[in-house]
Length: 513
Ligand SMILES: *Cc1c(COP(=O)(O)O)cnc(C)c1O
Image (cartoon, rainbow, N blue to C red; front, side, top):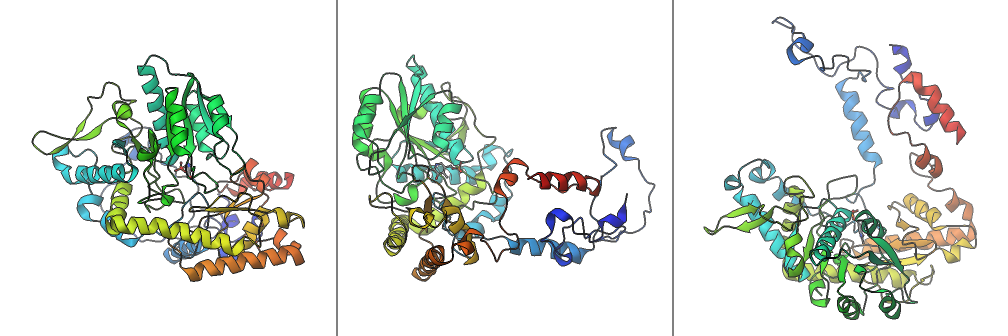
């Protein structure tokens, strides 16, 4: 081992890293330890002999550090991240609302946090009751008949829902061939349809950014399995003709799938089940305030009408004749299991805590505040940025960079500049129906004061784009890491530390780009 090399030598590819902020391997020096063990007073054991030849005894190169160095390293890294607990996260489509601490307190109760999925149902009655109560609450919120909590994300819920659509059509003798997806849909919708084996038929939006009914009527036929509709759409617009859309589909035996990840705009105000939706998913990690971002576990329940209930994933939570709760595996038409055990149970607890803490009136207020906040931003910034769709906004608003692009300043530049003003970037270049999209979703969590700070920052950035475009085009300036080469980051990602011997390879790869 060439130990000296590990000691505080910042490597060329990471020139922004100074001695004090070094990487954990580079701070390593041989022999340092964060612990002290007593001398062995029993005979040493050969691990390979005891546990078999596959036991690894060579642990590779590991950093050697003292406890305070380790603590400082990780504490310092934690301060480099932006987080919802530090400030606003106006990332449109992602619903980055505040995650109430009451959710965490409940999820940490001993009987809940330490429950094991292999416990027999007789010892899991409390957990099953949490699932049942959450199921009933979500069914009520959506106006549907049945639900599964198994899927682990929104896209996973879409996959599950479309598998159910296919199983439904197959049960009638014909799986059908295509799924229609409007161009204002979330990108996961066409991906889902394709993964389940359907052809994707693209439906162009009309000038208001909504489904073009005549075009839809022309496209729907006996080969259409479903329309996948993001509602409100990715431009934050509610499909006001949703009833007619449902009628057109149902007349040809096709189903209406609603991507309900944007339910934050509808909860307590209107119910998809009442306006003709047959099957939909929810994102507990958006609408129902379970933590997300940073790769935390998600949860994407799928709610459906009676006609689709037999196809739900199994097992399902049922009430036994003696009143206790159980799991039913006897579901001959089920699409099967889509996730081990119950799904991401910890998220169910948090979502239910959120629903119960708010109550029906609180949930309705949440929706109203989310929509009000987005419209406040829209009203305050519509002189500053181009507004491509004039239709009324719900929980998010989409501007474009058209006015600033004249000076060579693009949505991505302004998003990065926003970081210098202490905010997370808004959503850049999405949805794709808007060229140069700047998508902002404040959520109900933000106060008027915080919204005003964001509005001031964006106005200031627009002024900079007019007077000093260079400062925007080279942002961010205040972060520890400056502007990245995004192509290199995507094509040649460096995802792990490589030993000193690999430095040469790393450096030359970086140079190529
Ligand atoms: C976030 C989102 C999804 C995908 O959800 P994941 O949990 O990220 O898989 C799908 N559709 C819409 C409209 C979304 O906003």
